[in-house]
Image (cartoon, rainbow, N blue to C red; front, side):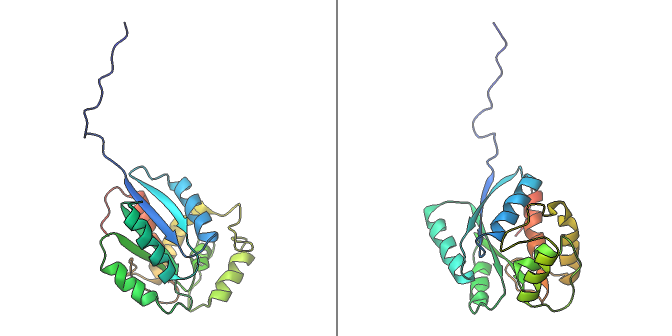
Amino acid sequence: MGRRIPRQSRGTKKLKTRYMVFTEGLVTERQYLELLRQHLRPRHATFSIKPIGKDPSRVFTEYRKAERRGDFDRAILVVDVDQHHKLDEVLRDCRSSTSVDAIVTNPCFELWLLWHATDRRGYTETRECVRLARINNLTGDKDLNAKFPIASFPEAVKRAQQAWSELAPNKKGPNPSSAMPWLIDLMTSTHHNS
């Protein structure tokens, strides 16, 4: 007879935190976050991505519905500043909650993508970020380029930190800025304080 391997006693296995990431964008943000998740391979938590579309208030509404169903342990909203009138209200609601954080990029998510390839400083418009993302072969027509340089995320983090040294979730930084480094830190560290 072979040797029996002792079973772990119940309760000794640590459960992974289940995060659900709700995105304002339907395609690019989802593609980027899935690529980032594959690249980083978080072991301490699971990250499900749920594209919503529309604006931050719609993203927040969909988060609330999923929260009532118990679909996750914690939620993260990935939104842009763009021209959204209710963004400040959504950020206020996130700050008063213990189950959701918002990651804001100003003016738009394409800025975060640009920082993987180029150092973009100074005020910029959404239209310009979208154009530069295409010129730098980072995106196509709202799709992430198949050869997107995901391994360059540390450069993007550094550029974001230089642009907004106080970067944090649930806040709108200056133009240009992004709180995406906070999410990357969450995905890579086993102990994270929100």
